[in-house]
Length: 442
Image (cartoon, rainbow, N blue to C red):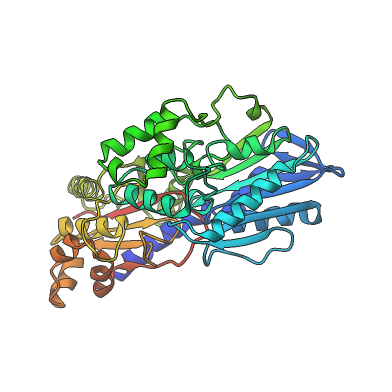
């Protein structure tokens, strides 16, 4: 890949990430004026009322830091849970680091502490909840009879069978006493403000962080159907299967639904999305001389299939360009699903990069990057990977054949050896994946 292409791809990607930085997003939606907290179009008198802050997610720390700048000592009590290595030094809000994507005891204990805080809220208090991507796994407060090992096993089964985040979170919510609207129930009748950074395709409020503050649209019966459709019902831990079965039969109460009065006092604001990231990327691409096009903000489906389709679209676009035409910047966002069959290292974006590289071999003037906006693609320290017509040429010089790496889901090591691995470190945000194609006249 030509160095200038990789540099431009990073410049455009960095603009996308900056636009959805949680601290900046919170500052754009929340302010203090005349002893009132203003959240979008609603106003809360501060005075001497107690302010309680709870929340979780990979980007919750910068949100909390921005909230401390606004409210400082007014914060009575606060605690958030973040992924290991994603914390920041705070003065008034306690940070607990826990495991992600597999939940652990630290997250479980801290979530129960936040529930106790919510239960302590009185009608004149104000509860502020911060939610970003990763919150579901970081808040494993489980229903009676469900152990952390049960939740881990269930999560592992769902992730390995390529269930979507909507499906994974639907099941998680029905094993929890925190998510699926139950945090709002715990805090009622105190008013609550929930500030969300969306990491799900479609920005469904009840799926982001498994929806701790909003009505839950999913049901026990739907959860059972999900496990049956993926063929994992008989592999579920017995307590999990029993709870889902009892819930579907009406023995256990459903999660709170839209007609529940507990939500009358809850204000939920979506403050950062994939669309905002792509729009910011498009603006920067234009300043670099590209004609930007946003293809979609809701990419989903099989990772390899979508990679081929998008790359083919980029090739077709290149074939329509004439000498002297402005180059194109094709942008897309969303979250595909990766069918894991091997034992190697990688993630959906790394696989998409290797598949795209295969389609681009021999083509000049097209370069791409595929990235997870949180900086972590799969269980690796890479955000994703670059692809161009020269990727497989570089691999061939090293004697590398991409197919065995694809077969073993080991695209991390393939891209690393080729010099096309994208490593950003933790970005402290998460609005699903972002992809960029730079397309020049052939």
